[in-house]
Image 1 (cartoon, rainbow, N blue to C red):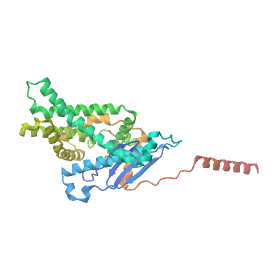
Image 2 (image 1 turned 180 degrees about the horizontal axis):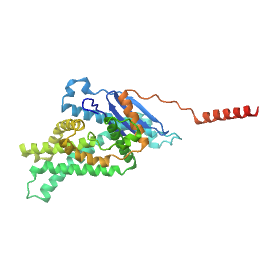
Image 3 (image 1 turned 45 degrees about the vertical axis):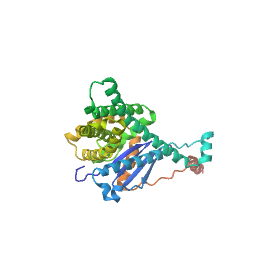
Image 4 (image 1 turned 120 degrees about the vertical axis):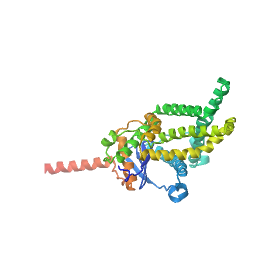
Length: 346
C-alpha cells in the first residue's frame, strides 16, 4: 500500500476473538462455542472527531490511549461472556452467587468490574511507579551510600521498569488462556500486514506475514518507557532537588505521563507510516517484546481476524445464518430416504 493510499487500521486481541478498527467503523469478531464466528459492529465516535481540540498532536495521543483502554476493557469483558457460553446444562449457583444476586441484583457484576479496574490500576501504579523508585532508593541509600546516583535515577528506574514489565508479560504468557489471547494478537498483526501489503485476505496469505508490527501497543509501551527515561532525566538535571522526596518524585512522574504518552503516540503513528532507520531503532525493543506477547495463530484464528477486518473496512457485519436443529435435518433426510425407497419399490 502506497503512502498516498495509506489507511490506518488497528486492533486488539480478545478472548477467542479480535476487535478491528478501520475507516468504516469498529468490528468485533468472536469464535463461539458452537464453532461459528459472530461479528458485530460497535458504535464508537472518538472525541477527536467531535472536537478539534482533542485532535491536536500530543493531546490526541492521551485521548486515544484513554479511549482505547475503556473500549478495550469493555470488549474484552463482552468477548469473555460470549465465548464462555455453556451449551449444556448450566452449573448450579453457589450460595455466595445466590446471596449476591438476591441482595445486589445483576448490577453487582458492573460493581465487581469497576472494583477490578481500580485494583488493576492500583497494581500498575505499584509495579511501574512506586516499585522502581523504592528499589532505586534502596540501591542509592543502602547499597551504595557513598555514590551519588541522582543523575542516573531516571535511567535506573527505567531499567527496573523494563525488567518488571518483561517478567510480568513472560509469566502471563505461560497461562493457557493468555497464550490463546496472544495467538489472536499474532493473527491481528498478520491480518493488518496482509491488508497493508495489498494481498487477498485469506488464511493462507495471512499465515505468511510477520506477527511483529511496529504500531503494536507493546511497542508503544517501550517507546513511552524510553521517552520517560529521557524526559525524567532532563527534569532531574534541571531540578535536582525534585528527587529528594519519593512522594514528590512519583507525583512529578504522574504529571509527566500525559506528555510522554502524547509523544509516544505520535512516534508510533510515524513508525507505522514512515519506516526508517531511526523509527526502526526505537521500535526494536517493542518488536522483540512481541516475541512474548504474540504467538503464531492457526487458520481458524485467522478466519476470525478476517471477519473482523472485512467488517471494519466495509462498515457492515455479515448477516447471521440461521441454523436448523440437527434432529430436524435428520428427520427430513430420513423421510426423503423412505420416499425414495418407496418409489423404487413401486
